[in-house]
Image (cartoon, rainbow, N blue to C red):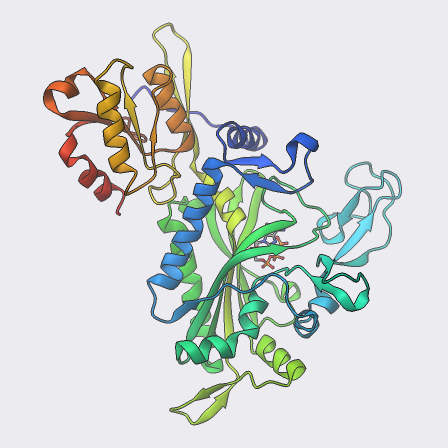
Length: 447
Ligand code: ATP
């Protein structure tokens, strides 16, 4: 162990290695790759879908299942066009856009420093506002009256259902409604792999509270959300909270903080946590003519609640967890060379595959014993079975997808009914009786 050194790869090279690992090991593919790909759209492969599900399940568990003041919702992507008028999205969900007169590339004006094209130095057009909502048509006729939008956030589905959910759940202030789902934004300049895409998933929570308690409540959510990332193993020094400057604040927000992660290209937003005041409920009340207030039995008062909104991206946090987990060990070889071990050090909760069962030889009864263990373990958690290639290669494959435990069935197993468990991070190997194996692993996995 003492011979293992950390290999430090500079930012751009590190990111290229991660993107290539994502493809090689089935985390993330470019969408429609066989047709040349579709800009900024990605598909999650066998490992990616497990990682993403683990991110979503961890979020749901800590923000809904383990709380008695939050309930869930799954609202539709297409909504009444008036929703987006009332919410202000038709009017102001825009980014300033500039085009280069020379190379024709398009940029977000607030991402360009100076007044020249960042690619070719050419002259830029004046900034124009560009609405980020995708439009489509509902029904057979394609005219202006049939235009609907793909939702650019899941939050409005929560606001318009506020009364429905409050009535059926009989929740009193303060309480929250949570939702995970797809959102679409016609970003002017997508990029940086899955960090900014035009189709993505959000994990959003609208927490309704008394106006006078909203700032205190906001502070609590900042702590709760930072703890969530830390509990899932993100390095503390790579995570920070940044308060929005006044000129950065959305028009409806009283205050807002971003949870930021230090990606190889710099600090970038993972989640926004805003105090949205009573802006949304009041806007929908005004436009729909329906009462959107909460009747407080104790105070005998109709209250327009303030809203604290922790709004996180599934894809962005999955990418941050991937980048954070990526590691390379260097070990000197017997022949005087250097051996690099690529390993994803996911927390046990996020690891796509929790354990892999590897028979040392293809000779019976090893595969038979191994398969029996595998079929038993997979009833409780994701387990892989791999018989192809040398044991060293099989360990490497599991390291590259972040499997915390490799279980080797060898010839001694026939005699002692025990297996060797290899721990991904420490490389320690421990002999464990088969009958104790599942219990021990479940303990380690905190299942
Ligand atoms: P940005 O300034 O990076 O465009 P934003 O402030 O507009 O983001 P919010 O509207 O606060 O983002 O969205 C909440 C979260 O949704 C973001 O923190 C991010 O995790 C995720 N998100 C937003 N836009 C995208 C996108 N185009 N691709 C992937 N995730 C996104």
